[in-house]
Structure formats: C-alpha cells, structure tokens
Image (tube, rainbow over all chains, first blue to last red; front, side, top):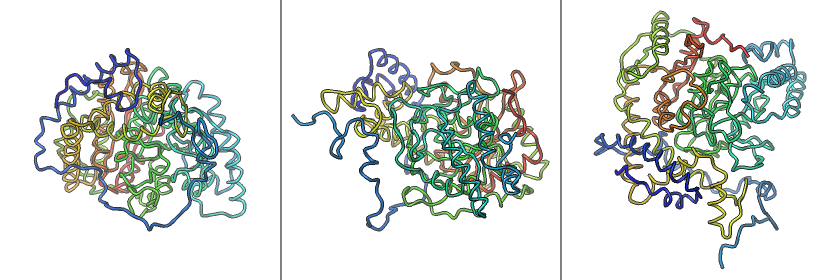
Length: 95
Length: 485
C-alpha cells in the first residue's frame, strides 16, 4: 500500500468531481496525511481472516416477485431540474 | 415550562388532560423562537404543520384513541431523514430545493405512534463530520458554550434537545454521529444495533454502518422512541427480523450482578483528565449499585479509525454517486452529461464531502482495492471478533464517549485527521454492528461542559444498556442539569 502521491485529479475524474486547482492541491496534501495514517493497517497480519462486508447475520434476503406500490410518475418528477413529457431532460448523450 | 420536560412527564400530563398537545408544541416553538437565533439547531421549522399535527393529536385523544404510545409528542428530525412534503437537504447545497415525495419508515412509524414530527435539524453535510461545521448553511452552537461546537454529525439534533427546543430528536450514527454530539451537549443518544431500525428513507452515507436513533433527555424516553421506530422493514433488506420488545418496560433499574467491561485500550493516554475522572467515578457508582467490573481487552481498537475511513468513504463514494443533477437537486449545466455531473458535484458538494468521495473512490479503484478496501474489511472482522469475545465475559462495555469535551469552533476544521481522531471511542461500535449509547456523567470545570459516558452492548442488547443508563440516572443528577441560554 503506497501512501504516496494519489493522483487527485485522476481520482476526482473517476468520481465525476470538478475541482479547482486550489482544491486539488489542498485535498492532495490533506489526503496524503490521511493515507499516511491509514498505513498503520499494514501492521496487522490478516492472513486467513474473512472480510466482513456488513455485521448482520443475514444473506439472500428476498421477497416474492409481486408488483407493489411505486412512486407515481408525477411525484418522481417533482424535484427534477428539467423535465418534459414525463421524462428527465439532460444534455445530449449521443452525438 | 412544558418544553423542558421529558416524554414520560409530558405523556403523564397529556393523559390526565392537564395539557394539550398544542400547548406542548407551542412551548417548543416558542422556545425555538427565543433561543435558536443563537443555537442554530434548526435549518427550518414548519410551525403551521406542527400545530396542525398537534391539533389532530388532541382530537384523537379526545375521541378516545388510547393505543398510540407517542401521541402528541413533538420530535425534531435530522435533515438526513425523509419526511413527506418537507425539505430534505442533508445540510448540502447539492439537493437544492428538494422536497421529499415520501416518508422514511421511521417517520411512518412515528406518525403511526401519534408523534408530532417537525423541523429540519442541522448536521454535517451528508453526515460527514464530527462538529456540524461541515453544514453548507450554518454551524450549530453548543448550548453550554456558544463559541464551541455541539459535536456532529447530529449536532442540530443534540443541541435542540439540550436547549429544550423539542422533547426528542432523531439523529443518525455511522461512526458516532449520535453518541458524540449527545456527549458534548449533555443528552442521551442511542445507536441501535445495525439492522434494528430501518434505513429506508435515511439518505445513505455508509450503508453497512448507518443507523437512525433517538436523542432524548432520559434513558426511558430513548427506550420509548426506540420501540416505536424499530422493526423489520420489507423496504430495507438489511433490517433484521428480531422481535421488538417494549424497551421501556425492560427498565427495572436493577443492575446487581451485571458484568461491566472496562477496555484497557480505551483508558489510555490522550484522554482529558476530567473525562477520565468522571468515567472512573461512574464506574465506582455502578459498583455501588451492585455491578461487577471486569477488565477486558479490545486489542484491535487502535486500527478502528483507519479501517473506518476506508470502509465508510468507499461506501459513501458509491452512495453519493446519485447526486449528479439529473433527477433532483441543483444542476450546473454542461455540454454533455459527464460535464454536467462534474460541474454539478463540484459546485454542490462541500470540501469534506469531496475529500471523502475522493478517498473512497481511490481505495476502491483498480490496483488499490485489495490493499485498502479488502484489508480494511478483514480488520473489521478482527474488531468485531474482539467485541464478541469480550461479550462472552461481560454484559456491556463502559468507556468515555469522547477524548475531550466540546472544542472551539474552528479549532479542528483545518485538520481533517485531528477531527477524525475525535471519534476514537465511538467508531468501532459501528464497524462491529453492535449497539451503543452515551449519557451525561459529569462536567468539565473551566468552562462547564458536559462529559458523556458510553455504554456498548451486544447485538440486540439495547435492553441491557438502556437499563444500565436508567439505573445510573436514578442514582445521579447529571442529566437534569440544563444550559443557561
């Protein structure tokens, strides 16, 4: 685990986050510090340990495949920044 | 003043028709008018709606409704929980003018129990923070000293209860966000066992760690509200089909023979001496009450903060991907959707949220997943095993809730790592999925600031820790002290 130079710009791009150059620099330094702290996890021997995804002793929780209540279209659209004809409007995706 | 009483006391008065729900609600609203200009606990209050609910509660009581356990009780709601037709912002700009189209399960349950659900309580943006300084709108003040933070992320909820603006508030806890502000503001705050309370309608931060819980002025109040909001929910597949007891009925106040664990790792250096003293005194008090104190070890405690900031940020990076300007919230236009997402998120998220999304994305990214995320999940297993092993010997674990009393606004805001380390006692509880609460156990002297005692219980061991808290309250008066505002 290398705590060095996270490419903040690249990771921000993966996360679809536009950062100012100032933010890139500031976050880079702060995250470098945090990653340095996280290094301590390397001190532990985790051989043979199963990962815990979540603490609840349940698996494969299912329900019958029955149609139930859904949010009506109007309610689902009520907070849309742009909408028309029951659809969310977004910038063109395909040229 | 009605707003200063506990839920139990108000229920007594309501059932004897001494007061009306309207009077109780008006007392809370009046208090908010008087002090919230200085405390800033509430982002908004729909007073008309609150009074309409109060009038309905009064009408129902008059018509003989007797099976609604919280009828007429005003409860404030953290801005991260969906209430139908009320704003839902998570104290962020990115949700813009979002109004929730639906009620969270806990809100449905509170309404069915007759409670008056009102207000949007301030918090750290998307529940990321320990001081409420990360709110995009305002920093809530600690009612005991308004130059200090109330804790976070449920700082508004804690401050509102501590300043008598409501009888109870709901908060959410992912790494300590109910317990830490409860400690710093001198109130009771409970994080249920993971899966005890449905997360449907709770805006997700870290899906394997989040839980909603009550913040109140007494353990028995917390017990009442916990019963009302708990239970399996078909809409949250992580909620557990464990029966919901009447938690208040389980409060015997008798703790003879209960085994209390003191973890040596939690009593180490860096702990404020007055907090150490207050916790030692509380341990002695429990011994006087007949509890047996046993030393236990949680050897992986020192790795909890590191493991948490990998797991929680990784989950958050996935959960916050939905805020992209497409279906709701604020939008900054772009030439194509990717640019729209990037600009919207760049403009809408605050710095702490951005830091955590970046960190979370990094630890999940190709080439780093095994070294970071997978390793952290294994450390999580070790931490959980520590607790399960300790609970073979003891019924509950006692510790300080925080390493220091409330710090000054601005003191840690430029140092994220320092801020993270203030969660050192609360964080492992979420990783292990167990239950925990904080309650008042004393004050620092100069200035007078609350000190919190933490009780950690086994999975679904809420009855034990609530009873321990209740017993302590019968034998002490810390929880009765109120800030001067």
